[in-house]
Length: 548
Image 1 (spheres, rainbow, N blue to C red):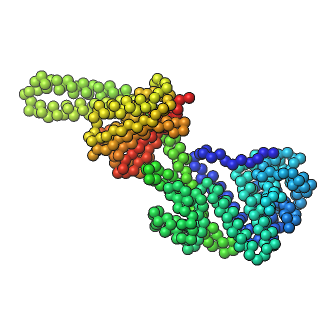
Image 2: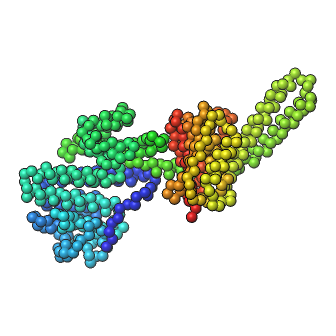
């Protein structure tokens, strides 16, 4: 017997539209199943509805519902994927044996044929989800599968959810039969709370609006976080008033389109937090139809935070692009450097001849002097670009040893102070005490810190504060380089690590600094993050693993 376990938290995978489709479909299945059970007051009808819906949803060979409910007695129902009459698939002796012991409290998979609860049909695996009645485990849903590998986390989760819905509905039926009057309202409230608990457990932000655009459901994940709004504040109110900070025209068009077409729509969105970090979302609009008329009565909005997936894909794209540029740079730098050196040498030679008076008789000696100066300065600028390319393309191995990042940051700050780059710049160094070491090439890390700091100083044309901060966060050390400059616009945020991309004036930058930084940090097994608010400043964070 193998107990089912939930998916591990913290494990991220690249965004897959098919997975998102399955999540939306499973949510709709559970919602529709729960809604269809609401009007049923006979336990047998509940059992029939559960097995019929489940056997087709999970692609099983058969499904059996069995329960010994106080005040009602034995309830059983079965269904198979085979058309025609449904055979009696319940092994009643095993049911008595199963209920005589302390049964499991969680769903489990079974591959031992001698322990199968489903009989009369060939199968290799079962998934059994227990059901509680009056506080005791007195029943189960047993689902038979043709192959062992068909029992995965998704199917197990659907079966467990259906078992809980079934137990709740049968409990409600028993309660209804025993107290026919005021118990119905209480039972519906319990069912509503249970449904809310199911929705709150989903790892997505979810809310539902009716045809009047009033919010009728608002789950827990819609309450937390910087974008969160308390449930009591949202339920019953107009969605456009609750979500007033969203673009109203676009939001209204999305809902109107969902009610009009009845089609599921998925939208990619971005939000910027107060600290300047960008979050990425996949928002799905899922219409709900009336079973009789087919009209769309409600629209479910599901928001999934896919920031980790998007950043992972961006990182892969940046790495591939940087590798391609590195290969290109390594092949052409040396070929360009030789003619550049010749041009610069010729310009310097002609300047010396002018100084010696070789062209004193010419009327154009002043123009010649100006042109030679331009030729030489531009040649040296090209030389700087090619040297940057060479540094960018070079394999960064270096001497890596246990390194005190506090010393690296202090040294970088001192170098900037002696350079006296920028006017009215205050430099603050904040190094935490007792920091562990990292395994790194101190010179390369210092190069990356200085490059980030130089960019920060260049962004503070009117002066400001440049802050270096080093702290330990979990199993990593973090170097923050923060400026109070002009910030980075959202449309440029995704381009800043691209080679040759720069917002500086011509001649002020090559656009290789951040690309080189990104390569250095990546080679050290770390990562480089950025947060920025336009007009307030930018913070670059270097994360490096602590030395073992």
